[in-house]
Length: 529
Image (cartoon, rainbow, N blue to C red; front, side):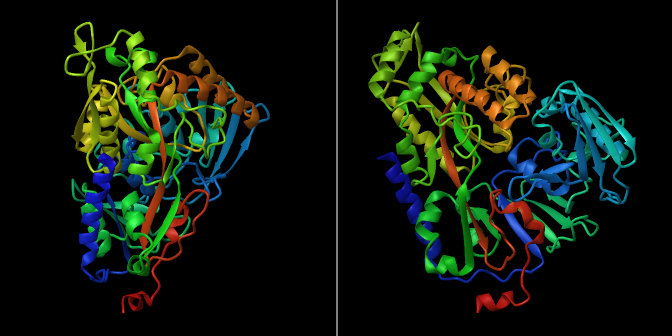
């Protein structure tokens, strides 16, 4: 019943929003405005690990490589490359004439500096493992970089997609607290103009961008934590695009009025939503207990109640669209009695108030949820009721994004409700390898499995895709059995874009692959008449 009430109240709020037949305001045509539920933190690429920071940083910086619309790795700052027959050496040939936003020329020295920065233990970055197998990076000449590996490294080309740093501004400086995290200088299509904390980030186009000058003079990101307010802003022209939640899409995505002013793009996201457990917490240290929780959670109810069917169950660390996904993995079936049986065998007995007790301690924990994400909050509320049926008390704590990140980074939590947006290469080293548990790294749950570690390491060294797939299938099986996360669902990505914006080309990579070439026709004002 809970999810029905949630949908009902959201429907009422949306009905109110659309009860006013008001035309979106006429915007100055040469700026594009989006919104984020959270503000960025640090914009230098090696520290931009949260989505809010990464979204902005990615418009300011370039890597040597990138994915095209068909998910092929192509050159970005590197024009081309050669890979040795043994897979241990890559020579990158850099584009000539690329300028940093301050006018200095980009060269091979910047690439070498970036490698040294990301592998420096003094810099708390989660991306250092991408360069761990590297033996040496050297500038052959001004526009040529040679990368030598200790052993073959399958994700090598993708790893060089991280933004390159400007040596002339950062050499000899302390990077983590550098002012360039707030006022970055990159080579990308947009450069920083203004950042008002908690309000907006304004980028202006780079007139010297190598791929061509972006159409929009400014790319503005407004910070709007409340999704209902964000939807109002979309509706009345305050922003040009946003990700719709399932209720917004279901009830208004196909209405004639909405379709008159907005195009909607829907495709499976390349990621998943999960509950991550602090495995150092005694409540979650036993695998059997985590398996019991998995049996107690009805994913179908969550997908129908929260996503309104716009998503699929997640069985493990790879979404179904990944080539590493193991289709033979069976999910933990929803079975309350089995969950109770497992917990009873683990020594948990029902107390007088219905809550499980073991050694005098109740099975009660706090689940952290970030502010501004309605889907996660509703998911938490449904899971709270589901776990109550087996005697587990779940308390929800909603935090502002930066406060949330601080607790996660310091591992000051019992459980968190989060989501991963994954890279296309299925390498899981950063998220599940036992060596990646230091503050700021991605294995913040503290997962450790020697066989998984070994398989992840082996998979990184195999260049043959089919051979790698065999190892990832086994990894999928092991991690699913261990349940360091309760893997919940893979949501659909649903984005509404104002129809004044043209040039969008949906592809395997989504819609953002060509955003610098989006434009507004000269006659766009006619659309509002």
